[in-house]
Amino acid sequence: MGPIKDLDLDVEKGRIKALVLPGPNRLMNFFTRKEDIVVPWEQIVKIGRDVILIETLPYGEVVRSEGLGVRS
Image (tube, rainbow, N blue to C red; front, side, top):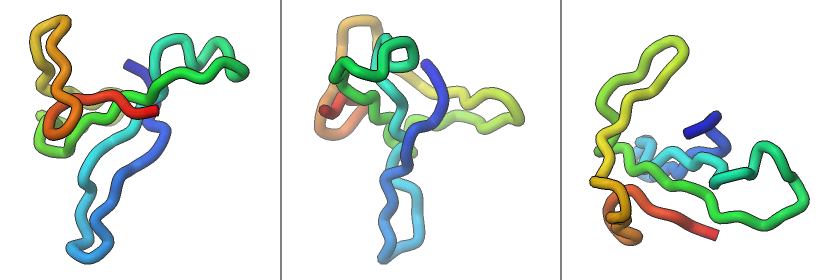
């Protein structure tokens, strides 16, 4: 999916709420506005040295408020 662009933090609880990744084609063309991919912390399965495994929904199903989502 790409490198981590940002973190969504809960500063009161000191926890990571979500990882923010660049949307499709964002790495190749910096001048176009694309949506970011937001991966909630609850969907992180394992963090390794070079890769982060996430639990995803079936292709085409995107839950914008609680699950794997997209933001502009």
